[in-house]
Amino acid sequence: MSELVETAIFDLLAKVPAGKSVSPEEVARAADPESWRRTLGHVRAVARGLARQGRLVILRHNKPADPEDFKGVYRLRLPGPDDAAPAAEPES
Image (cartoon, rainbow, N blue to C red; front, top):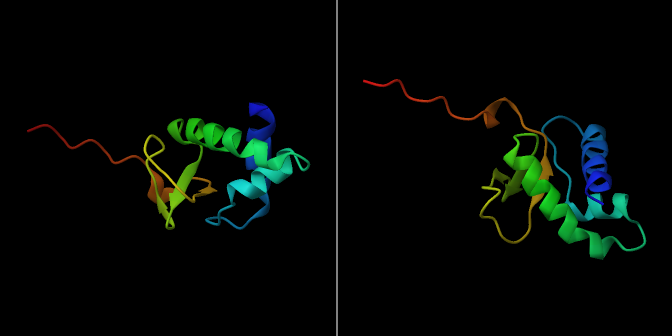
């Protein structure tokens, strides 16, 4: 199921303009049209894993959310230049 959800996420994101997002419901419906509600938990789990890898950004209120600690309504988008990990500060 995880591969199916991951494929659905990236297929949907490929169809939207750069910087735009998709909802977990859209992903679930694409992955499993008949039982999409049951798939929503899988979408969240796969999205968290992809966000940890830096391959996806989870948005809350249109701002990047911590994949380890987010609740409620969220959306998914591909990482952009502003989503790069902060550079380490030079040691003094």
